[in-house]
Amino acid sequence: MANKRNKNKKNKSKNAIANIVKLDEAVGKNMRHHYLHLTSNVKSEDIPGLTENEVKEFVLSIFDTYSIYMSNLYMVEAVVDPDIASMFLKLNINRNRHLSSVHVDRFSNAMELGQYHPTGNPILFDLEENMCDGQHRLNAVIKYGKPIRLQLGYGATPEQIQCVDSGRWRNLVDKAKMAGLDPTPLPKKVESVRAHLAKIYCFYEQGFEEFVRRKGHSRVDETPFVIDYIRNHLQSTTEAAIETYKMGEFGTPSLLGFCYYTIVKKYGDVGREFFKQLFTGANLEEGSPILALSKKLTNLRNSNEKMEYKGKTTVRYIFQAFKEYRNGSDGFKKSFRWKQSKVNTLKIVNDSLA
Picture 1 (tube, rainbow, N blue to C red):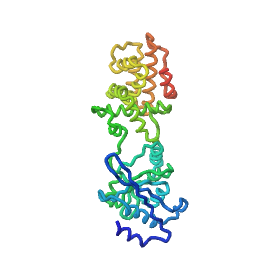
Picture 2 (picture 1 turned 30 degrees about the vertical axis):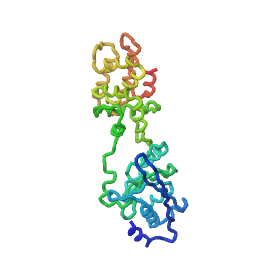
Picture 3 (picture 1 turned 135 degrees about the vertical axis):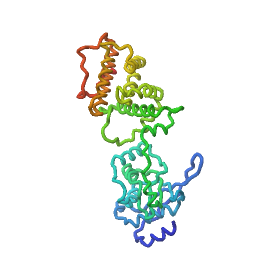
Picture 4 (picture 1 turned 120 degrees about the horizontal axis):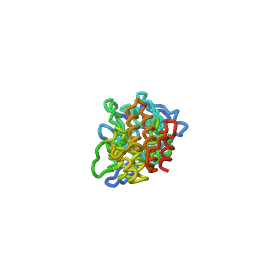
């Protein structure tokens, strides 16, 4: 590191940034480790005028003060404030992917909620002090407006840079599994249905009109809320997933699971009997709202309608039929009309549960 630092001193200007490192100790449960508080005498309004070489010298001084060499990288854990983040971003190489405002918002919202934690994936600088990974996190720090603890890495080779962000992304089901919710493993399909029905229910509970199929990407990572919901309602969400994950002939299992969970949550065994008759087809006679529902769902499943239409309509049909079933009428009303897509799905669900 010293040779690299001395080499860059040739480019150091008269207005170079002052050394910035204050070493702290944090005592963990099983070990004592160091982290750095990064500060600078450069005012916020002067950061845009800094040269690239000045910022590179600043980066080198961090790793030269205290760093651990591991996996061919010099590693530091540091508290980074918005000004330092702005300085690092001056070294953001143009080979980085395009900045996603949605991704930045997810990080900044996680920071605001106290849900952002270092994972071992550092803000990464290559051998020429160019920043090759971390632009979304640093922009999130700026948007959040407060210091955040981050891991920094220096010395990435071209081969290492090619491996950045090339792993498989962990989806909601993967993260729920990592939370260790189940004492004994469940089939993958059950885990998937449970995670997604809980996500749909969380959106429904918050009053989103388009809770069945929300468009676009959420700017808040809903994963922590969904996992907490499953943890707090583990038995009932698992029951709904087990009862519906094989029922693809009637619709998307996660939507069926949402319907099952929502109805049984309020009506208990009455709801269970309703779905038992729907899924088995037992004891259904002409005039039964469940028989009419079964035919409707089968026809809808086999239609060429778009998935969004099918999803909303599946939920509408199930809740409308359950309302008729719960009323206990002797026969399904001839005059009954299935409400179509122009009707608000949230309103139908709430009316059917009232």
